[in-house]
Image (cartoon, rainbow, N blue to C red; front, side, top):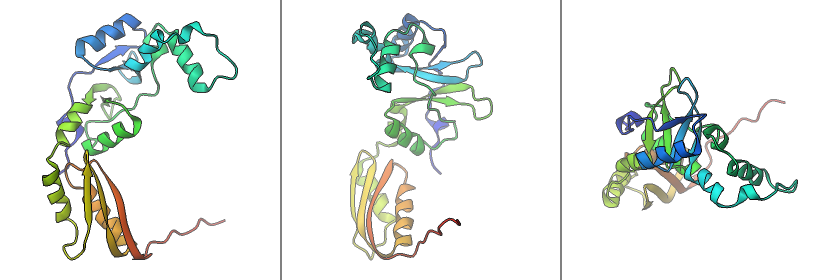
Length: 218
């Protein structure tokens, strides 16, 4: 059975209201020793996130420079945030969230893809914030010794084939050759299901194609 967010999440929702001031946000980050806080509305539903990077824009001098029509969208957004004074103005929206039932493996991939270190956990029924999932919570699940993890990975691969296995921070790269593409897909998913695997990079070659995509009707 896969480990879910509810098994490792923090029960404290580290959040501020939309009208929270710059000083309030800094105080919340300092109090809980975090690099970001969730911004919630009056119903405790996440609407965005303010990170340390958002706050540091005030120190970069962005607000003191005029906006040019040639500036990129990202540059204009940075300028706006540099002059912001409330959480609603500073936040990056929408908030990236997970639920208590989200597999930790899926949450880890989301953190990696979005390059965030914490995620608000919301109640799937009410949408209200119920806690916070920190990167350190996730990493506790994915800190199995590489040798132990490799043993479990090789246990799901065919013993009669020659497969290479490389592991880096929970990401498993597997190489080898099989007869059909469907078999390559099957083995990739089997490795992905091994507890402690964050993601799989499949470099398995196949001799023939047995998976076909039906083209859409015109």
